[in-house]
Image 1 (cartoon, rainbow, N blue to C red):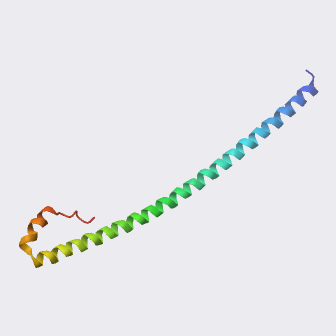
Image 2 (cartoon, rainbow, N blue to C red; image 1 turned 60 degrees about the vertical axis):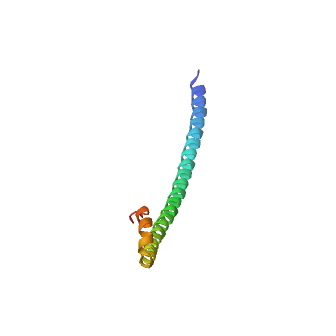
Image 3 (cartoon, rainbow, N blue to C red; image 1 turned 90 degrees about the vertical axis):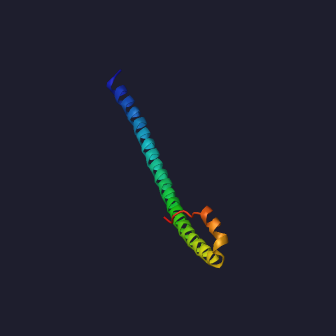
Length: 95
């Protein structure tokens, strides 16, 4: 092989390698963009779920408080009859 053939072949190889590097870099850039968008979407979903869970906990506390108050009122009206019911119902502690 002569020097000109070697230089021509090395030129073609360098163009092919450069194209491969550009394609690979583009793939990595797009891949990281997709993962970033997915992570942001998951974080937004987690934030919404956290807000919903907090709201559910608050509502449960209010329901437990109202239920306790109702038991107190009913027991005050007829304490002997509801004492047995009270023994079976033990509300969970508010957290």
